[in-house]
Length: 160
Image (cartoon, rainbow, N blue to C red; front, side, top):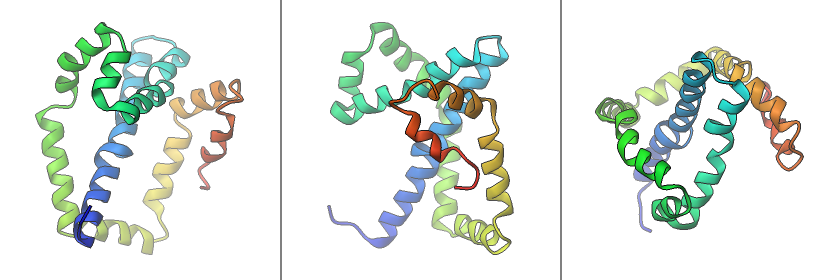
């Protein structure tokens, strides 16, 4: 694929912030909060909104949305079409467009470099908040009982 440095940089930053990292983590955190605030078990909420994400991502990786839909229940497929656009709708799209504008005009880079020059106080504060969240704590406890994923816990400390 032919590209330019600008295109690759802009798209990479956009994808990471809006979909792959920022979007997915915010969606997981919000789903976990909605379930636990309504009285559902934090352990089951973790499994439903974070742990099973790998299964869905693997299915998409292997064959796109069509494979994911084919391998999941009709109920989940129907809900995806009906509820997904309500959760990630016009307001989310507008926020993504604003985030892309901030990447393109240098606002994101300026804010990042300002935090870097100050010794990353904002980054470290956000990292610490994430590491100490109920979702992170429950996930670490549950993964401790899963030797096949236990290796991942070495990444859950705020020092990384």
